[in-house]
Length: 144
Image (cartoon, rainbow, N blue to C red):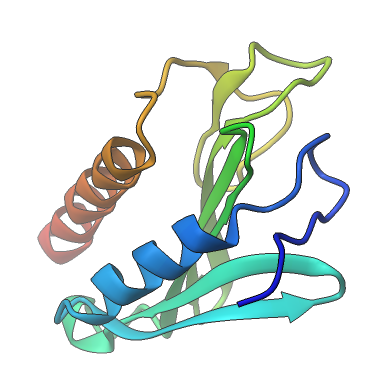
């Protein structure tokens, strides 16, 4: 394990040990098909492919990407790929001109500006909140 790597999205570097902890935990669940730490295009992140069996057939793929920084800034992006569109949502904590530090870019397209919000301080609690909201989304998909 090398030193944390920044990606320019926050004044702080990525907190690789947190990504590794989340990778280990998520890989151990049946909801996750694959969890890998990637460094595509200079952006170190945890890339998660969610298990297709949790989704109706109309969802071709569902993914989650997590960037957690050493200053507790965070970007968590959830995406569903459908035959004719994608459905995106993003939970963010970072300084910006369009919202408070904690904010949600709501579905279906995660537009900027987002909605001001407040996330827990602990990264485990933030991920639990996100996974709970994804579970609600999956239930809504099955109810359609």
